[in-house]
Image (cartoon, rainbow, N blue to C red; front, top):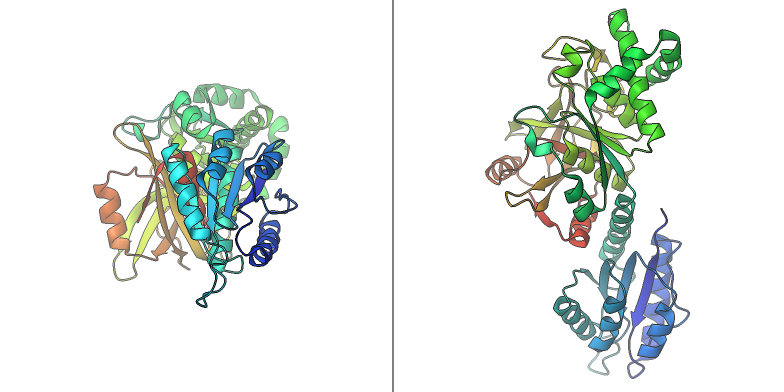
Length: 444
């Protein structure tokens, strides 16, 4: 879905308009570089009538509210009273300090706008600096990307397949909670329905699906033929379901049903779906699937989903692992997406590889407090060049801050045991998204 960002450069004509015009033109150039579809006024908005005329036909998803000069509280009031969308408040740096005239007085205007928005109960992001400043480009770019994800969440259909296993209730989601907090539509289907569909398919019907899956996975030569054919049946059932119902993310039950009732795990099916851009978590962790969707949407890359299983204080690393459902695209290039068996049940196919290194990574989780409110966990680091650590899929993250503190604090703060590792730095965007959604952000 397209995002409408509007630029509101507010001010009054009693300041140094030559300096303001220079900042206006440079600001437009920056915004158009960040978002070519940004809507900008033809001139600075130096009166309330000018502002109202510009806003008359707009329906923004994000407002960049800039004090091009000082402006009183009436300007911000006119904007936030009219629109209920995210706002990033931008203060310009005073261009000249020479003992002479105050050219812009943008910062005082920002205090006026911020006080107004606070009194009106509106949250906003904030950035200080000139259009040429790197921090300004980073923060406004992050806000635009976060607002795009916020909008896309409104059209996301997420499916919960089956129930969480006993003791895994942390991933169980309420349709009303997801709709209220994120705008996400949650659907539910029993795992047995998809298992039943899978059992009904012939080998001939599944042959093209198996060929498609083989293009993503390593060799299935060591997997018994029955399991290969049953995997193809299951893959067809899942892919048909998400395609026909326009599903963007799924959380799927895995054990024990797919071992006891079907005889073949769902792990590799979820791996290939992740390759195809359908964000898929296991153990019916619906908030884990939502975390994958958010992280993947921000980076454009598949996400790793797994448990923190090992701490190395010397290397300052945390190892993340799961049974074997990582996206095949994350596999190390020297091994590829090798196929093995589930580490506990010894049945395949399940993915069995270490993940590719990456210079930037973000650990993320949509979590819940005891009172039901949502919170975001964010931590930054990089994925190291490490081989597979355990049977299943794994990666090793070296944190920017203390890995020991990450483990201690996330355990003591009662976070869930599943996390997403994004391939790319999206910490600023996640923090902005949390601000836009009114969700507490915890950085570790």
